[in-house]
Length: 120
Image 1 (cartoon, rainbow, N blue to C red):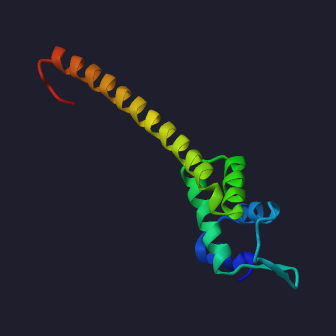
Image 2: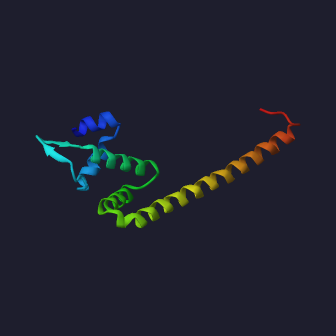
Image 3: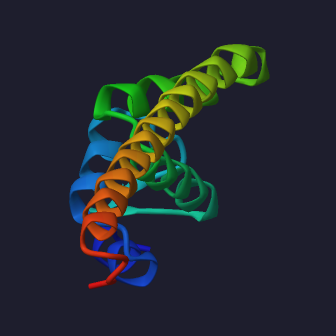
């Protein structure tokens, strides 16, 4: 499957595919007649890359994670640590947003209280 076919079929942005190629992580990807050819293992790795992007990994973090993944199972603890760090940051953000909502609701409540309970 060519880069264009992979992009269209799996809705993977071209810049992600080009990043993947530029990192030299394309173990089974072969260049045929000027086009990269992706196999199922490549598409699985690309799916992981998209997931990492979606959960907020930077390009550098994605590359580090993928290099560790390709090194093998002995890197599992390091990869897990990266995921735990990102999870903790996401939870902090959620808790911050919850506090913002509480403050917002308090202000809304105060306004409604002064209006005699009218809701707008």
